[in-house]
Figure (cartoon, rainbow, N blue to C red):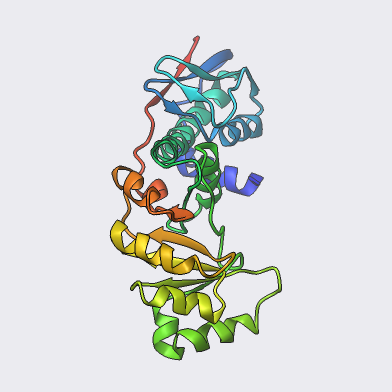
Length: 268
């Protein structure tokens, strides 16, 4: 949920303390237009920015809509000064979020329908909410939103406590509703993690061949999910999806998605 404080911070960063550029009298209408195809996202944030400035918004598309070059995404009406102050922030938010949503959709389309494409916590500080919502708009899964949503037993925990002891340690401390995921880097450790009580086994930096072998080994553990992660690209998705894995998580959905090209036009 966006707050006025977040919006104010975005605007202050762009407007500064002495805005002469946008000191324009009168009323105007503005249009946010896509210059390339993809999946639109971030429109709710753009609407919130304009409404904070007292600008009326209408004819907005819905996040998750597939778009083509030339499509109008959002139309606004209000004082020219306010419209111009909000336009660059709105364009940047929609462009970035739509880039994330578009890359996510390409990954989802590359996978079979039984495999979830998930994001990671490799998000831009201050923009996690925007980026995670963009992943959902693209058809992906947010994974855990923050550290409180699931326990991730990583290699440093295993090095300190041992795999079985690490799972036991966290199992005693979490709510009954909190899942535990264990990261493993070898096929042999996948069933060990399941045996120790993992709800999800993360197969990290494994080849598709190794992932398939690990997935086969986990079939004996009813209800345990298998997740593949570690440098997986959109081009790699079909090979990993074919292994039978339940989830493919990709940091590149958020940290490497190029911005979708958008422009803002006014009728002044």
